[in-house]
Structures are given as C-alpha cells and as structure tokens.
Image (cartoon, rainbow over all chains, first blue to last red; front, side):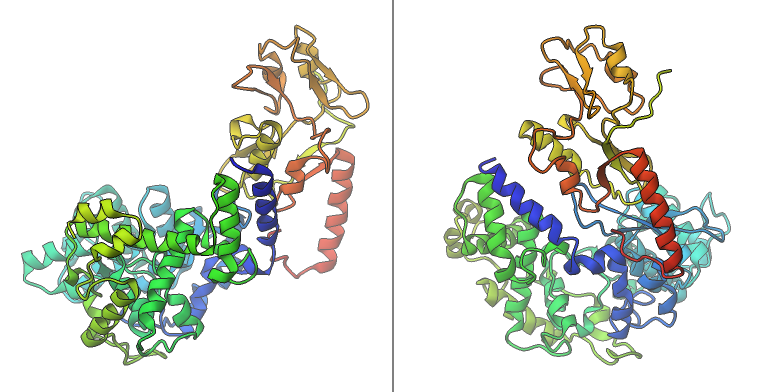
Length: 419
Length: 170
C-alpha cells in the first residue's frame, strides 16, 4: 500500500457519501424499484419477451415487495451501501422461502413467466440462489420452455421425470410448474438436463430433433440469456447487446441508461450511438476492472459520468499503487479492457455474424404499450454495428487492427490473435 | 460462572442496523496492524443466517473471566474504563482467555501468537475507529444503562410516528 492514510480518507468520504441521496434508491427499495418504470416505458420482458407491459405490475413491483415481503437489507463484503433486499414469503405454499430480490432476477422470474404471485418468484429465486444457478438465465430458460409448451413444440409428457411422472402443464403463469422445472434444471432431471444448457443449445437440439423453429424465441445473444430491458425500443442498448463480448449482459453494456433516461431518442438510431454504446461499455469496464460497484458511481462528486468519477478513481489508484494515474489513464483502462475481451473472443473463434440479436427483437413487435410496433430491423442492426465498430476504431468486419493493439500497448495480443 | 454484567462502556452492535458488511473488521485491522485482514481484527462480524448478523468486540465484563483464568497474570482490567490489557511480556498464547470468553471476543494474533483484545482505540484520536466508520451507525461505544434508555426512547418515538413505517434502513 503506497499511501494508506490517503486511501483511508478517500474511502471514508465515499463511504459516508454512500449514505446519502445518491444511493437512496438502492438502499431503501433496492433495484426492484425499477419494475414500474420499465413497465411504464414498455420494456419490461413479459411472457418470454412477447410483450413489454405486464397487467399485474402492481403485484410484482419493488414497492409491493418492500411493503409485504422485505425483512432486512444486507450488504456485500465491505460495502457501505447495502442494497440486497432480503425478502421472505409468509403465507401460501411457498411460506418460508427467503432470498435477496433484485430487479433483473425478479423480472426474469415473474412477468417474464407470466407469474403475478411474487411469492412464487421469491421461491424461484431462492432455488436459484441457494443452489448456484444464475436466476436471470434460469428465468429466461423457463420462459423459453413455457413458450415451447404453448406453441406445441413441447408437450406435457415431455416434462415427465421421476419427480413429476405425469409431466407438467408448462403454460405461462403456472407457478407450480415453473418451480418444478427450476428443480429439474437444478438436478438435471428429465428435460431439465437439456434445458440446463441454456436456451441456445437447448433450442438447437430441440429443433434438430423435432424440425421446429423454437430458436426464434430462444432469447439470448451469444448464448447468454437477455436482461430485463427489452431492446426493441432501446436501440443504443440493442447495439450494446449485439456486440457485447459476453453476450446479452446489462452489466457490460450500460447503454440502457441513456436510452431510458431520455438522453437519446430510444426508438431510432443516429450516427452518435456507436460512440454512446462504446463509451458506456468502457465506463462500465473501468468499474468492473478495479473493481468498484456501479451503484457507487454518483458518490464521488454527484455526477455519474467520467468527469465526476475519474479524478477520484485516479486518486484511489495512485494511493494504492504509488503510480501517477490521471484522467486519460483511467479512461484507457476501459478501452484496453474492452479490446482485450474482444481479442479473447476473436482467438476463440468469434465471427462477425455472432454480433446479433435474438430473432424476436428483429421481427416481432409488441402489440401493446408505448413500445408497440417497434423492432430492430436487420438494416438498423447492421448500421448500429458499423457505428460501434467505427467508434472502437475496429474494421468494418469488427476485427481489431494491429496498429490499434500496438497503440494500446498490447502487441503480444495482436500476435496471439494473428492480426 | 463469573458474572458477565458490566458497568463499563463497550463496543455495542445493534443487530437490527448491522448489514454484515465487515467494514469494522477491516478498519480495526488497519488501525491496529496496518493490514486489511479480518483475522487481525479485534471486532468480528457474525452472520448467524442470511438476515441475522452482528459484530462482537470485548464486552468489558466485570470480574472478567479472561483475567481470572490467565495462568500468567498477563491480563489486567482497567479499573476506570474496564478495558482488558494484555502484557505481551507475560502472555504466552495459551488461549485460556479465548476459552473463558463467552462472547468469542478474544483472538490469538496469527503472527505474534499472543492474545489480542479490543482496547476501544484508547490511543486513537477520535476514539473507536469501527464506530467512526460503521456506515449504518450500528456500532456505538455504550453500556447497558444507556442501551436500555435508548430503547425506551425509540419505543416512544416509534409510537408517536405510528403508523408511518421507517423506510430508511439506516
């Protein structure tokens, strides 16, 4: 530790700022408070992303959760914010289930499954949390199975296994069936074994066996199930999800933020968006690299952008290491991180067509809500990808030029990926 | 059994306010050793289950059992403040004090192999650093008399505010 006293003073100031207005949303209601807003904007995944508004939103909102189920907030290690809303089921068949409830986990396991009983959602999340499954991936995989059932691709008996010999009526809104399938996925029992691979692999195998087209509603990009902001009407975020090195991840691309805050026209694309998508990704990468929680992003100076955060982050780095980092050096962390992640994908066989969106987002608009009638067309996607590649300084094919890697101080990476 | 009631101040943690972040452990360890290491902390966070958690440091018992059992008379209790002091020239790390403490508030320093006990940062400007840092104001330097007095006051305050539910977890 280069300068412990400075580091402690900075940490103390941030820790105290984290008790103020900038984190109030996370501390008091937790991230689930975003449910109503997403519904009002028509971007709340409903019944496997078939619609963007949910009729029973008031029964699955963060406010409802706070009033009826919240027990206590707890924190991650050394975190001064404490946002995890521990929630318990007190009545009904799932009484006793308790876990932390977040926006992303909740939407995937409530409206996305057509379930309006939040007690069932808490039970689903408890299964995911206690047994080590990603609750978002689990929810979207169950919703994929539900749509397969409703469209006749999977039948009741396809869900038969030792635990459920009769099979399951896997229709949207059937909470008991969803919970049963979660346990089957956990235990790799019956069709749960196939579904435990996620929607991309499961749909490929199901379609090959049955001659169906269930891949059209397998809601993933690069095999990672999509997050809880429907990107049809969030076009900057759509670019971010399509090009994301990790696939559909809201923690890597933070471009839903400018789209939802109205800093961009979310329904259309213009030439500025490649830069917005790239910069939001680089901004997030700085936090992930240090690592710092993004919920603390306003606690440095009140501003959640580079100018608000980078000077303090530079001081934190310098006090820890004795280096002499400035604003541009912090910025470079994000640029280098996103480039090396892309280089990793290139080395592992990435192809331009992998930067894609789920079929549904490109072809099936919502019928209801403020985002009705909107899709991301193939032309828009191609245009958005070009804008992003240009902002990153990459080629039209999305490859990283050798000169860029050398400029970023990574000639070894250039050599390894053969550019 | 030796009585464990105390008239002295000690570091108290309100389990309702504690979020289990363990910042107190890191701050204690840094203050006392210059390291960030939970195992060098004199206050320890306990997570009983997902929502039941608290932090424990020396409770400054009267007739402290740790002092009574020490076979080498290495532990002494400050008559005024109740702080237990360890004489490092006498302590040989036998850990009888650790066994005698009902609260698990004593640990053996893994580097020196000697007993370590919270001294309420008596040499620090600004008093106990864990109390200063606790982001949820769960920690305080207090005693049973003041704790019960505070509880009575909170009870009345809550009754007056009824039915408005306190939303801020702080």
